[in-house]
Image (cartoon, rainbow, N blue to C red; front, top):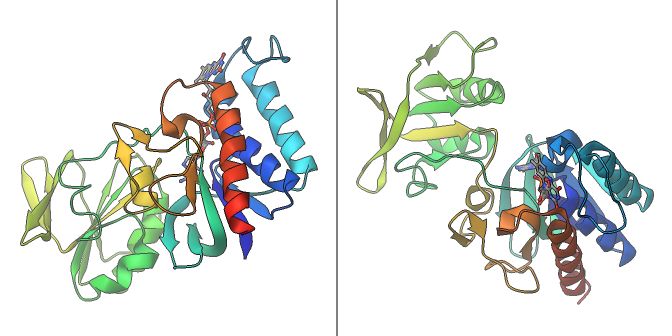
Length: 282
Ligand SMILES: Cc1cc2nc3c(=O)[nH]c(=O)nc-3n(C[C@H](O)[C@H](O)[C@H](O)COP(=O)(O)OP(=O)(O)OC[C@H]3O[C@@H](n4cnc5c(N)ncnc54)[C@H](O)[C@@H]3O)c2cc1C
């Protein structure tokens, strides 16, 4: 089991990783490719102290190199769920499970759009992980709404256990679906509820009855990564130690709100790392 798992891959995550290593904690960053950090897109950065006139790409590479040189592990993946297990956390990274004593969320600006009913019915029929929750829908009807082809793998898994699977892709070419999956297109308007549970999906003017609604998203809202996480507006609520409302879960960088700036991300990453390592070593 590692001491600290960091979810992200931008300046906040790399700073948190470096500072965990400098306090002798074992650490792994679970992040999508480093070019998915917002910083990578910056043509020129001229307000980061001591590194004038840098491109975002060069700065990202410099941060990455520094963190790796200090023994930070980087696992390129998308994390879909973090499950509290009492004394530790289980991290679902593309269906590989990892254990960590503390978590630092550095997921950047929350770009994910939620539809009516989605947040309220999380855990009551709405899920972001078929392999975690699929068995609960054995012999039942489910709908998979997918922003990317990773949803096809989720739908194929569900097709083996569910009575029916309807797949609604939000991208162009669907290529690897099993034959018993029904494909529909259109605007997904709402997750419908009856008796406190999911009862269907509103697709344009059509209602698709179902017991479970699975979402495969490009960007996972932080409060669906860690259920019960306190969010205000679009930002994770933290105190000055970068602690969230969930013990041993910290957050840093753009995901904690404005200003969206590298120096803030790097500074918060450092504070989150020091706070997390102090608790882990207690
Ligand atoms: C064009 C542009 C120019 C900018 N110029 C400046 C500037 O001049 N000065 C300045 O200070 N700031 C600038 N910024 C802002 C700066 O880039 C951000 O404030 C900074 O990148 C925030 O770092 P972060 O680590 O919090 O988030 P990000 O850099 O956004 O990194 C978040 C990372 O988390 C990953 N991630 C998210 N969810 C998951 C998941 N579930 N599993 C795995 N990985 C996940 C993302 O893929 C991404 O790699 C600019 C931004 C842009 C877009």
